[in-house]
Image (cartoon, rainbow, N blue to C red; front, side, top):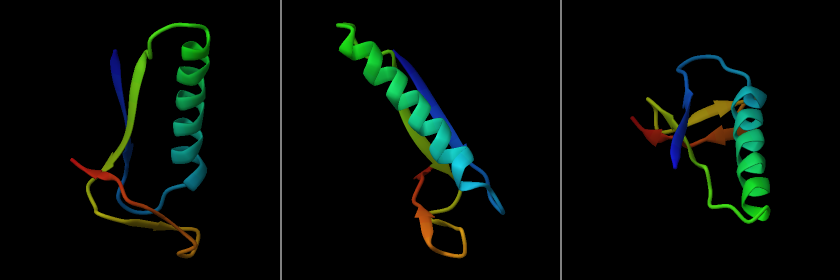
Length: 66
């Protein structure tokens, strides 16, 4: 199994660049499993801060500490 980590950078970032990548990878993994296979990926989100607020504070991401 491969481990895929999406790294959340410090500073300004686009919410869809993080969530979009996560969504695509998890859906691909789910589809692979529905075809009767074992999971190919373990996907996580990591960063250097405990919380990242995006879109004027409406959304926040709590990445795993690196």
